[in-house]
Amino acid sequence: MSRSIRTQAVCPEQVCFPLAAQAARLLRQAEGRKDENICLITSAQPEKLDARKWLEFNRAGFGGIENGLHQRLDVSHNDDRCRIRHPYAMLVAGLFRRISNSLFMEWRTHQPHPEYLTTTNFQAAMGEDHCKAALRLLFAKRPSLKPP
Image 1 (cartoon, rainbow, N blue to C red):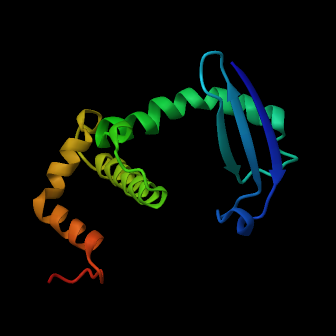
Image 2: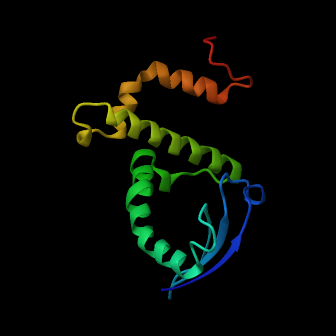
């Protein structure tokens, strides 16, 4: 596998991402596979994170990301089986999945024996009433936290 990266200093307004100082485009090429273009954003200034170091971090961190957050999203929310294809809908669904995962991680820290808890436990603890309220808030034309 070969990797190449192009970096550029940016300001947060250019990329619509708070604290962004640098953006990069990473190209991964492997024999027998389609080329992958990946966009990256960091708050590290270019003088503190040059292209070579960024490639090292990306290579070392990829397994951690794939085995951490992505694995949680796929197992908990069937992320890889998602049938959503519209870019904005994918963005919204992804944000909700990540929010759900973050809420689970926070909830788990306050439970006895957190090492044995899963998102299924979290969803059951939230109960059906909370789920109905969340869906009502999500799909309402005029969202409100007040009950109907």
